[in-house]
Length: 534
Length: 68
Figure 1: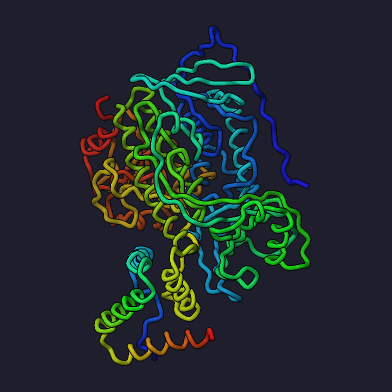
Figure 2: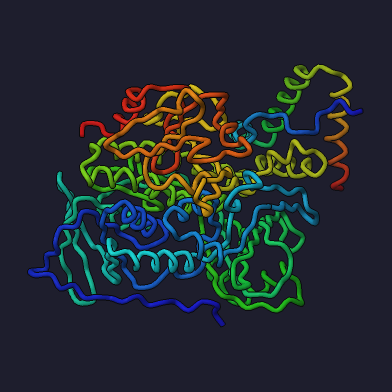
């Protein structure tokens, strides 16, 4: 019995004269979580896109299940967080077990007033379904199901794609190509780009089971459990009473043997005990790699998500990193397509998201190294950490069962402007999830609710009360005390505001510059970095 | 009151752990043991406090006995 009915989205045969489709401004290859987020973001900014996907349904199996707070904030901006929250299972706590006891628990919630929890668990097929349903409402997005890209030619002014369908092939020219076609990216391979990094010598078995079981939704990670010694395991609750079990198997295993139903069932039984009835919904055997391509922009082709970088799953940094890629690229590509910024802005996508991917790869590599020690000596050290962690809190800081996805703080970005406030939120950081109230808008409860899709200036203090500035990029001024009420002072505190301050926030809700009392020319000078040669 | 710190005191714990493992993991068991002895002695000298060192030795030894 399955808990999910896979939708079949309508396939339309190509009907282009001479097999040549009209030139699209933007083509997105891959209608998964990352590609669909990209399409929605562009559409919200008024940019049309064509999404090409090789099949006509959602993700096969539950796959990426942990969606982080930052991802939910991005989807909230795109109007699609509500169904995710309604369907997903909220969690904030991780519990780490060693042998037969719990070592410690950690709470990932940034602050108690956050609009979203640290994470929800939701099967990837639901995520894609909700994104597709939203995209189908959006006239600027054309979804082409069962349209498979087989080749491409890159040109200085665009890209020509060869697309295959059940009813023949055609050529699709476009000005910009976004490759969101996953870890086995056709575009990346067709362009011959090296996808290099580290292979981990370990196998993991993923089983999604349906079972009725009470208890809080928490992340459970087991080192060397009595029911599966000398290995680790992970357990997550998803929607519809589906549970994700993830077992470390080791390197020298017989893959076919491990995947046989009776062996999978026996392994699950040892973990959950003899009494709880369960059904198996999905099983899969994985090995992990952490790797990246060298550059995420190649002329008119931009790589996002797993097409650009791959991480191990410990930390939920794959899907969440990909959604942040789309969030970072959306406004930049829109400005370039609309002729409001020069193409150099797209190089900052490469710069910023390669920095973020390096951080994700570093964290997921370290977690995987801890979970799978490479040598007997490193295993001795790892087990010493676990042994000490029971009695000594310091050792718990060294236990690494996955450092869970947090938004990238783009502190080194070349787009960052002045930092005159030196608060905890600095240029490059995403804005914090803090509460506020807005006169006349009862629906707005958090800072992220009122930032919208453009550039925003938050103005504090008497010196900035009369500040007025206009930019061709669009710039909205919000004066604290008038337009927003920071009742508990938490927003001012986070930015390090003492009396007067102006904070420039980018369209992706990252801070760009912090000043005390800037004149309009200073602000426009910083925004000129965005416009470049335009 | 114990003088040995139990609470986290290492900045960038993940970076520290990676550096430690990178240094030791490819060594032979004999060399790894020698490395650990040297590192212990260097850190012990840095700590200096005889009471704290005694407590640390006791804590490390006790954990090993518990496993047997």
